[in-house]
Amino acid sequence: MAGQVPESRTRRVRSVLERRIIGNTLGPGGRLPSTRTLAVELGVSRSTVQVALDMLVAEGYVESRPRSGLFAARGVRGRLAAPRDDQETGRWWQARLAAPGPETDRVAPSWWNARYPFVTGQIDSTLFPQHTWLRALRRSHDAGHVEWSSSEHGGDDPLLVEQICAQLLPARGIDVDPRQVVVTLGSQQALAVLADLLVRPGDRVVIEEPGYPDARAIMRAAGAELVVAPVDADGIDLTGVTTRGDLVYVTPSHQHPTNVTMSLERRLTLLDAAARWDSVIVEDDYDSELRYEGAPSPALASLDHGRRTVYLGTFSKFLSPGLRLGFLVGPPELADAVRDRIRLTVRQVPSLLQRAMALFIQSGDYARALARHRRELRTRWTAARSAAVEHLPCVPEFPPGGGSLWLRTTDGTDWRDVLEPARRRGILLQNPAHHWAHPTPSLSCLRLGFTALSADRITPGIAELGVVHREARLRRQR
Ligand SMILES: Cc1ncc(COP(=O)(O)O)c(C=O)c1O
Image (cartoon, rainbow, N blue to C red; front, side):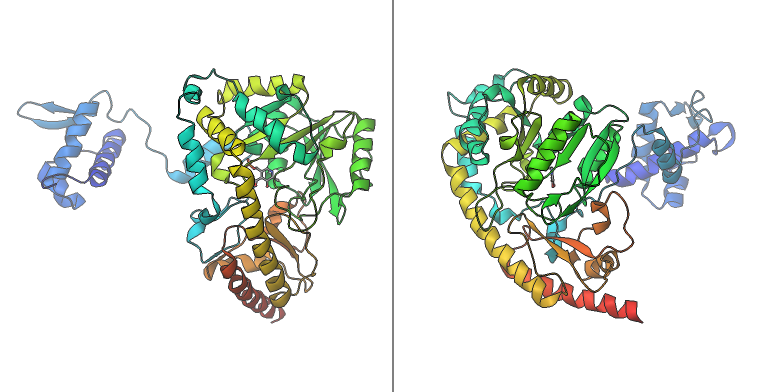
């Protein structure tokens, strides 16, 4: 609109003047220069200066004295500390934080704009069942369903809990009472609440190595002492763990990040150890639906007659991480405590989403979308597997599940050296260092996510990655 002053320019002028007022670097007696002088000095129009000055007058920084001009207000001039710069402010806040800063690798911002986003835990939007999801969302507003809008704080949607118990958990071999199910904001919230409720400072938490970095960070933030147990082709190996753990965190279906399925023998060993140690097991079943060959193994919780396992499920990996919907299954006493903690923090998981998800499952659309999704991901997995074997010197064995390939290269590549050259070519990779609790001298493994790119982009993407990888090797040999 003609005559209007752009807001960002005004804000800039305002903050320059504010700094001068606070720092007392104005004319005698705190007099402000004329609008004409300020406009020339700051390279803006007089009207911009005028708007900024009006703001400062309204806020009490500047006072207007009749026939004398504008002055920095006496109560403010030179009284406030000079503004701190970003670096100093950053250091101050870091020192204030009781918990350590994030140690994990965040997915690159706007990853979807990359040519080849081999990121993990994300889906490309074409996979989301938009039509049927919208139908469920619309139905959640019909009479008989719209009660979500007046639901009690802290309450889970009984229809969603019923659907989880009737349709999702039986496929994992779990048969429980609805009281034992709590709806969460994804499995991440479940993990954080469990750490809060179950881990005391100094408790020993056994984790997989390599493993899920966020679980490690959550347990560390709760004050746990981490005990790492290596993972091989059969899953977690507890042989070297000689002292008891208070809690064991595992991903048995498709181990994060290697995708191996924990063998029955290892499951029995784990249950046995947990019984001896009298420890809790947290089973993070984050992507058991993503299985491309053979039947998925039943959940570890289904074998646990001692009922010491807490099971975590999520809708993030198959539907969308943006939905923030997951669930926890545990004994009623624990489920009640988790519900209370959720009520005190976020009140509840949005009941609109809960009802829409309940209707989505009940209508059969969930099962149909899952079957389609699995077929599509199988195609992507097959493409990724063949391209990896063709273009990279890697061990040609890939467990048939998960949304990523765990590439183990055999030529001594340290994948950290490839991240930046790959990024320059539009290939987004995750830093492999984050999978390990203890830094390893050479990181020749890479978790290559294939769920965020369409099948026809996977092969050229991996071929190009092969080129970047070869160039990195040549640089190393020089
Ligand atoms: C092993 C594992 N657990 C939990 C999560 C968190 O998932 P959600 O989106 O359900 O919070 C992730 C997400 O990447 C994961 O990989």
